[in-house]
Length: 196
Image (cartoon, rainbow, N blue to C red; front, top):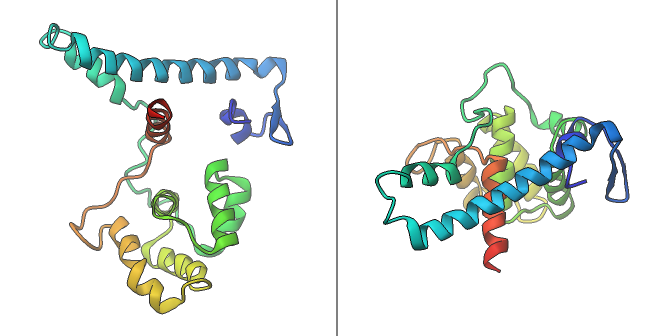
């Protein structure tokens, strides 16, 4: 199913035991996903080779173009808040079943199971919920209700509430944290896999 996330998201495949059964009319999606993955890997490798060998020779002519390619994102911009969409903590479970991507649904399941997520998971899932329309007060209520089952409300307020308020621009430098784009998460994962 990881090979055809767009088909899974739009429920156009049959899922069974971790496999997605793709109709012949939908095979194009599988090819496009593989192509994009191969292009992403090739861009990372090209950028490394470029930096190591060719960059100085072509610094005026081609360097700006090649460097922009490896960091470009052409998808929709979800970084600006959308006032039309607002969710509350009670909506999260229903939305997870019908609308969350699999990775976010998995994070919610782990949060419900363990009543805790590591820092990276809290950042990614918290920013996802913020982008979905969860207001700061509701986010604090949601996270407190989960974490207090394991660490208690007082410890939650001391150790975790600050980072939630920080994501919403109410603490620290008072800048709103940008959402994690899937594109960036894939690049980070690819870079990690290529290094190990």
